[in-house]
Amino acid sequence: MSEQKNNWLEQAKGAIFDLDGVIVDTAKYHYLAWKWLASELGFDFTEKDNERLKGVSRMRSLDILLEVGGITLDEARKEELAAQKNQLYVDYISKIDENELLPGAKAYMLGLKERGVKISLGSASKNAGLILDKLGITELFDAIVDGTKVAKAKPDPEVFLLAAQELGLSAAECVVYEDALAGIEAAHAAGMKAVGIGEAHNLPDADMLVDGLHQLV
Ligand code: B16
Ligand code: MG
Image (cartoon, rainbow, N blue to C red; front, side, top):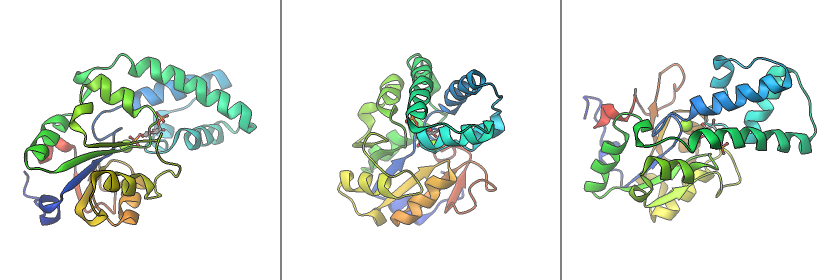
């Protein structure tokens, strides 16, 4: 482990991992699907716009995209468009395999398991089950909490509190690994420390910052 060693990290009994941006880079497939939808609606959606969607729920992402395009639609039409985007996204992720795991992700989780640390997923995605299956890492998790199990999106702490509960641990015993600002806020709202994956200017409140899980192996 790097010189950034922290006691709270070593003492944690539970590790809760966000999915997109921490374990796998599915953001690129979300982007391709959202960009297609924007082009169908007659406007361009850039990679910079896409940054605003990271860690954000599907319907909230659509609202941001429509805001970029200056378009207002009723709920029924929005549900239709979100379903179309999701179908395209699912087509992409159906083709991924373990080669798409981010560097160090699996090795780090295996190391935690060896030390007896319990592991949960804490993701906003409703497609998390399929993604973990394609990556071949479902069995590593003691609990899987994703967008199918929670009603409130990050920065609400619900996803992480449920993960701790499913691991049989208190919030204070768990550490969160997150790449999104809303995720760091959610961890803190849950009473958990957060390891930020990314850059300081995007994640100013992270308790510790790394470029990726490979830095912790
Ligand atoms: P889905 P995470 C998030 O995953 C993505 O970062 C975000 O871009 C996406 O909109 C959200 O999942 C919902 O995904 O459409 O598959 O339900 O970072 O929370 O693992
Ligand atoms: Mg994420």
